[in-house]
Amino acid sequence: MTVNILFAASGDSWAAYREPLTRALAEAGIDARLAPEMAPDEVDYIVYSPNDGPDDFGPFTRAKAVLSLWAGVERIVGNSTLTQPLVRMVDEEGLTRGMTEWVTGHVLRHHLGMDAHIVNPDRVWNHAPPPLAQDRTVAVLGLGALGAACATALARIGFDVRGWSNSPKDLPDITCRHGAEGLGPTLDGAEIVVLLLPGTPATENVIDAAALDRMAPGACLLNPGRGTLIDDDALLAALDDGRAGHATLDVFRTEPLPADHPYWAHPRVTVTPHVAAETRPATAARVIAENVRRGEAGEPLLHLVDRAAGY
Image (cartoon, rainbow, N blue to C red; front, side, top):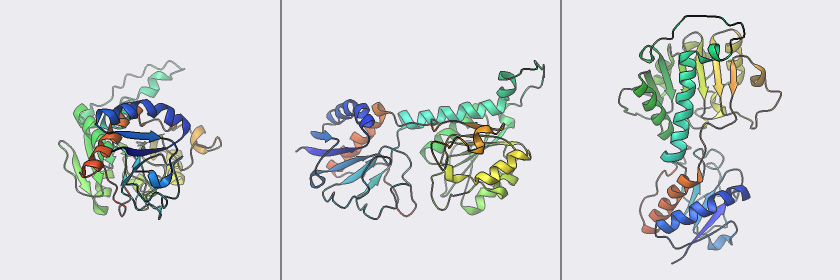
């Protein structure tokens, strides 16, 4: 029996995904009709991109699941027309590895003080070696697939890693806390803080003035998670008066980041253009094909979104 799969994303994405997704579906033993346009009442699965996919899921009366190409689902999870199961993208070979490399690289940059050596126009010979990783406290907020992978990688290097999440987690060599009562102790005295929480009403402005005050003086903040996690005004104030040492930011409330935004010109801010982790067609296609296979076999779908939690 042929499975009808609507690829509801941009034309550029269709060009990138068509071949690897066709191949992955065939390797999974699925007889698939894959197309960027299809009558709604014929669709069995929707491969979805929040920037380009449908807003009204009501006409897709036959669809068994919506398979997002993105890890974040905040743009779709509250859609009242979405009654089908929603699956987010968790791709250990692509997204997770990319995020781990970005986080590890920027944590090491701040830990080692690389900026002072890369840009040193006055040729200052400052023989001040950094501490060892074991003497540096790193806090990772968010211990889902991405956060757990990043926290684990940092712990393997030797950092003193603390982790915080909404629900209890147990990760080797990481001090894990959870819930509202666990956030403050996780931040207390942290020298580098990495934000990998989902974007939900509960996590908006989790880094506010009070949170910044709990970190070590001159702490560095890395945000490859969601732009809504930070109170931008509070962060800029902390950077201006030296309470925060640097912020490396990959995600923002408005993207692309407007040219007149204060982050661009601030000497203690590094802007990266939402490149920390990217869905890669070759590996993401295999994740999508496995979920279609599971759906057709009556097996539980992987990475099913909890609508109430928002992720």
